[in-house]
Length: 436
Image 1 (tube, helix red, strand yellow):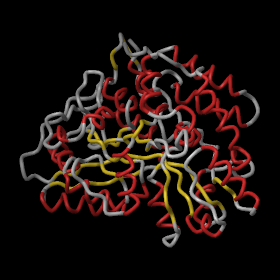
Image 2: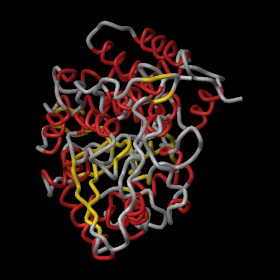
Image 3: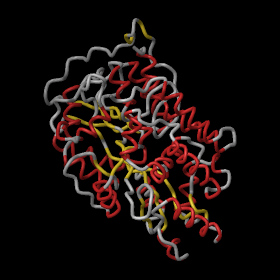
């Protein structure tokens, strides 16, 4: 059994959308956390004023959350919720320290899949299976917030889709159609480059961005769910020709990225796109809100993953983007569960989708935003998981991190396509057991 301290380090290191590191939050003894969560104090009498402190890695959502929380507080006058967001790159360390100390926070945002599992397994969270509304959330989404004991430890927040954002006006002004296949993407990129337009505003300084881009491009080589099942069953592995071809295609795209892209931040890549200097940008659907704030009149549309052939299946690449859970050390577990019930409600899901232009994980929510509606419809038509995050987020370092770091190595000329595949497979071999 892995030691608890290692579990928690994994939780703060493995993740999809950040690649920061932290020190172990607690020492271990006999496989148990020496800093086990303190016993909660006696809850206050009903009606006694209570303040819940809520951690998030989304400072940009503060205004929206203040509105959501105000709706909750109307129904629970004795409960006040204090939303405390932190920079995503600093969040994991702050969360780790708070959980270890056992004080200071009542609601925590959890990274998805093995990120949540590791913290739950370390004994820092309360199960919330009995919270009203939780069992109405689709099982596939709850799987992103389970412990190894199969209990649910978080209310899934939103569904992210990896997409190609494109500027409709740039393509129309240059007589180009949105690409549907790999060959069309290359043709469109050549045409844009000839006009002096950056085809794809890709950043590479944060390695996770490369695996998100790969999730969209890779489907043009290996397809969707059928190939994922072959990987999970062990019928193929990362040295398979189709997977190597997906890496080679990432390499082939490099001339169409901004100069020195491997050293630029995502914010710089975003700016190239929303100022009209670049025609396409690949990332999660959460960037829609960013672009609409920065450039409300930007003529944006989206594409899902690329099809293997013209007219073929183009799956939408989806994953759960975190959840909210309750630290075991909270002094207010009943009030925190009331807030969890609110987060699991259709009322919250609809506000979340409408105000933040995101796909809610709550069943029955109808997106108001046309592009969010389009993402939902494309997902209903064909959907595949973000392979590296959903299924290969374990190991030390995680296989996902190994793949991303290897892609960076390829782009700076240190690794070949074959070596990227070999390193990824070697990482997977250390922990992954194919399904029987």
